[in-house]
Length: 134
Image (cartoon, rainbow, N blue to C red; front, side, top):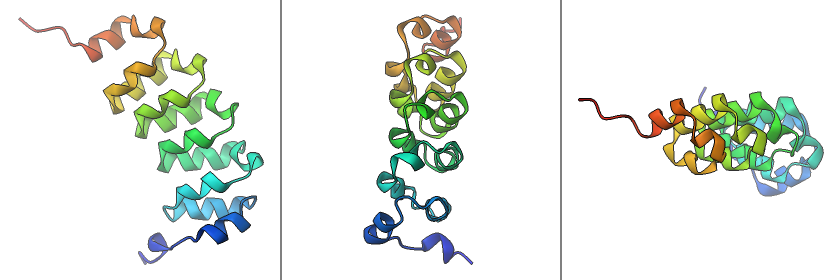
């Protein structure tokens, strides 16, 4: 039933389970990805957990460990549903064409977080500023 999706999470419960991966995975499935704001550093470095979270809510990249912000699959998944979160990707991935395109296709405002080199890319430029057809 849809009751599962409506499950409410209390901050007290989330804090008590801040190092409980199964609890956090369930919270993500229940649409309470905000719970990861209370997760331990260990969990924020857990690739499986963070990848699952960014599939539902790209904003979670903000909480991810430095290593996961440099993980192409994690970042690509995050920017595909929240382009502007590109801001929190590693500089290397902010210069990655595939990641950059995914981000600006989701939200053109993400352009401001692309590296200068990537902004000069012809395909990126054409997407952001389509040539006028005659």
